[in-house]
Length: 154
Image (cartoon, rainbow, N blue to C red; front, top):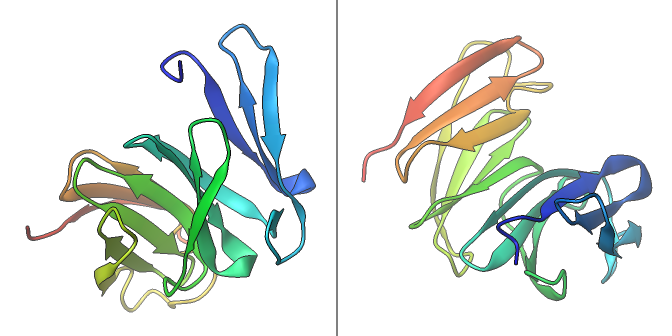
């Protein structure tokens, strides 16, 4: 029952872990690298729609798992994902260069937007994402030290 469990990305050990609400270690997945079962800087994580999504930043992909951390698939073509969020309708991936990618739940790219225009487009323009709804996101940037509300057209 994931409603009471916690899932976390572990940057230093290139893995994802599942911990119960009581702090009991449930499972871990991943080692350093770029092949199957590997991660390079699992930077963001979210749960939704019966899946766990991990922003595997330096491998330029999102890894998708079932709720027991069994690997399902990769999603690519979304730059280097620093953050990932899932809504009832979409998957959003935010890259450090300020691009936010919108995908359907099968991982098909629906489009992208460039945020933080004229603010350098380098560094950490998206460090985290929070989805308020299918069309409203908040992004945090560590280069700019700001939070920005992004509203997408349906």
